[in-house]
Length: 340
Image 1 (cartoon, helix red, strand yellow):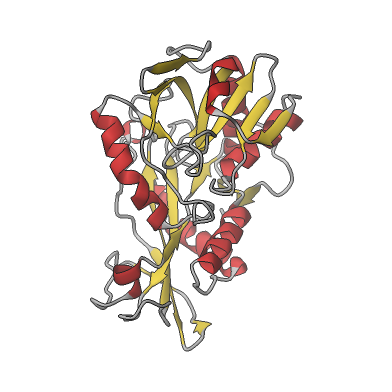
Image 2 (cartoon, rainbow, N blue to C red; image 1 turned 135 degrees about the vertical axis):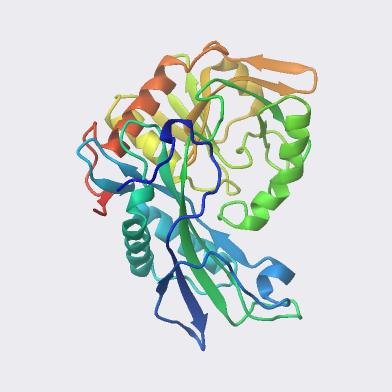
């Protein structure tokens, strides 16, 4: 039986659910995992995560489809990306097949927390791993813990899918040849001051430019950019510092194979923004959210799609991908992972 929750008015926040998954890495190998009802993490004061920020994470969602099934969306890509992130942080990758097994177990055990179809809410799933054993010298730890929990959430932006007003940040999100392309907590920590600063100035989000020349568009603190040209071409920025978003890759496929649009991934100069018809930011939490204007100092770029609603192509991309996730639009083979 579903939990007694006002699903339609959920915010994007944390609610403790029934079960979560835990597995430990010690003596050179991953131990057998387990489900627990204990939401508390207990670690040594000198644990590597607390001293040198050895941590990586993922984010994905479970959905109730139109026929009542509970599914997730392309979790194999989250599993492989997390393994790639771990390698870059000198952490032992959690086996990808075990990632999927843990996902299935966590969602099944928390099935009553998966929002019903048609409510606009989803079950957000957070896999993460961190250095759990003591380390005082600057080096990788010897022990790690992989955990996965879930929480029901509403829309990421509390005011719904309305065009955002964003500013070009004075700060850099990632260093050249750094860790911008992996999903690690340290990258998000770097964006927090910029995020708070933007909000204090009245903006919804930041646009980070490339740290080397501050010429090219990269991403926000937690989402990738998509641009639509006046002739309907879908463009996404290319950079070694951009996180390879599962949502962005999926939207580009939808644009080409469902909507028949030309797609391209290439470096995007900031001074090109005035030539685009539509702009959006995309990621697991928001799917895709339109951007109405971008401000850099005294310069303001207003997209023709406006500040009232999504542009027509952005709307089609959103509707098609959400339809695939909820089972109302046929999905490409392998995109939908049915759990129960």
